[in-house]
Length: 548
Length: 65
Image 1 (cartoon, each protein chain N blue to C red):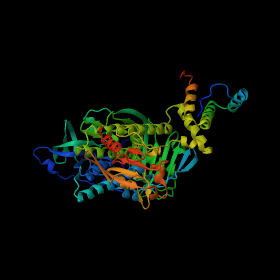
Image 2: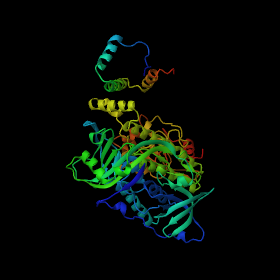
Image 3: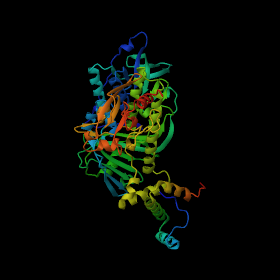
Image 4: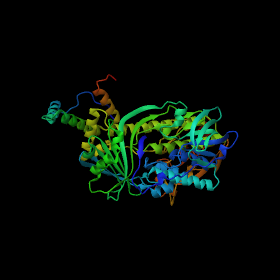
């Protein structure tokens, strides 16, 4: 999504997004007579670029992040982070911080016209270490990730963020990429074996490489206002269709930490953007929504438009695109930052194997295939939400209103109400890295799936599967370690008795009495069967590394 | 799972039709459109089966396949 002229004013209590967090410092690379070649360079220090850099550095890969700015995100921007993102953040050493600060919620209300049509309680499924989602301003998210970078640096990990380093030109070569970088002290040249473009929806990298980015433009404008108020509104998601205070349009109210509330108002297409975001026009709209007697302070206001589109391919030689630079969706359903983290989660272990010479370069093509699959799913789901929220024809509005009218009296119509579907991890069905399913087990753990968490007494399953190939055995025998062509696999031996809540059994066995899973470093299932068979698992490992 | 029924199946075709017209009597066009839309949704939920519903949409569009 693209923000047009966002700004903050007044004396907001939260100035974090105006304080430099990674100010410019001269790098020795700028004084080297010949360009220094780095292993991996990441362009962009947003949530996706930072996640990629931390992931690589944790695996011992030298990584340099270049960002044209030196601060965290301006304004709250992305505010809803999904369970899968929190699980990935756990692996990156940041998950706890996000959950401790974030707002947890599971209730919501839906309004249509001048009335509430229903309320809901999501009643999340039990047995996961992380909540289904949290609300948190993007600037806090980035701040915690930068803190994690600092910790890694203190431990001596090869990671660096260079603020106010703007990439002006990119030369692509067979085995490296050459970057011309503009710094406050003048230009310099640096090279990288691999380049990760995490530079957002308007990706300069994409433009410099002349790559198309086509898709569907939604002709609409939305006003985001973050307001600070000590109001009594509960931590619920409130969504209005066609309310009296914003006729013919939609509105959203959602709580963030620090008494900040996100208000999102659809404005329509044919508006004067400069006029609409002036405080004298924003404030009356908010008063009409919140009530005249509610005291509030504006922290940040932005008008945005959006498109649903993706690049044809997320890989171009030694350049890999991740996050909004590769794909854009509507904001309904929180699929921007959340899908970007699934991109880097998918990419970094593959890049590690390729850099170590343990997998062919072609393994990176599976990054493209698997994440294009994810992007297409996200584009479809967010386009459907958008079509419900902003009907594009008379009949689509008639059907939409019929759903809302029915939802007030009849429960059956409520699943049809679509004000954004929660981001779920993508299952890589049909991926060439999967082996054929050889277990009569639950669908949620079929090959390609992201492993669902499960309680193990006082602990949880997912932290035990982090960052390496694992052979998960449940009431089955297998060797404790296995090596296939340089790739090491470690066994995690469990029994259904390890989880008295039986979530482990429900999610990993179903009707089967035993199971052996091969799990990738990104916690996706590569293969499964009812018992260990050396030959088939050796094949499965080779397949998961792009060698078959 | 059953197939979409495209042979006569109504208990009393004339009663149903009269009932349907009566529900629309006196309604302005927008209200009639809204009623039809709600009726489609109620019936679709009653049927539930996705294959039957997509066959029904295709049948209603009067397409040959």
